[in-house]
Image 1 (cartoon, rainbow, N blue to C red):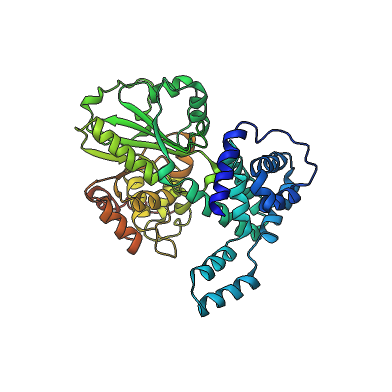
Image 2: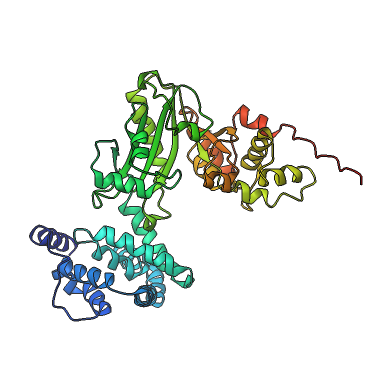
Length: 432
């Protein structure tokens, strides 16, 4: 049966590839169309039905979309009564037939609906957009988390590494894609085309992005790279309009200074670790003289953490001074290092999300810098401090295991020294 269905889908794709999202005369509501898609009718006219459902969905307002997700969540959920009976049947007689029946019943019908909706050309992007709507509605409808889980489950399969395509983005990339790089930049805003050119055109600049064949004009994630002579301590200088470009063959360090996820609908699907590892491989091959691979990363939770430390008898005066923008650079570096190495959540993991990301990929905290990001956003989130995470290719697997299994924060000597350094003394109160 599965083979016949596959052949039917293949022939339908060949003969109806460019027309499955076209307008139809089907007057059934979206719920009836979904039920039809899950029925035998869906085996015969799956692409046309899927296209009609997707087109109908796009015309819904927010209230109607919320009702649609409620339909997925409740009416297309697991039949627990049937599943319980089938689990018992399998326990009593673990035959392949009973296992298949139990497995089928254990999967919510909405997963199969989403798979069938993904048949037409362009459907994947619409379904990713559908999850953007779901994430927005989830804020007031937490019970829809079950449906959100199924989106994540399917996207993890649809967007696994085997389907991702790494492409270099440069100044010759089509303008429609460059526009999206500008729009999706999430770390260091690209102000105009001149700014973009400074990040893509010089010989010591690189940009790489992951794409998916079903969404060829939509980057999933991209990373901007600077090739430098030494480990940098300021993104302001790194992106300066007046800097002198370096010949790529003279570079000793590859710096990942901006990693931007592009698709809100793919939140929770990790691409960053795959991207960094493949880009390291690409750069190592192209520039074998490179000695170090580091990031120049924001510290997004620093000021929020500092605001909880102002009453601390040991360093409260420094936390206050940093937030007041009156602290010495060395104190900023020291407090940032303490935050990165020692501020933990209840589960033992670092508070800072960027730290969790890079340490989870096998990096180590290398060094911390003050006055590194003087943009409004940089000052607001970390008082201008930034951090280098270093990827030592011979140690990334060990670091990853230490962090994943034991929440060990691996740090290099510069970062450790900063975290242990003496802070400026509290000013003495003047008698009045």
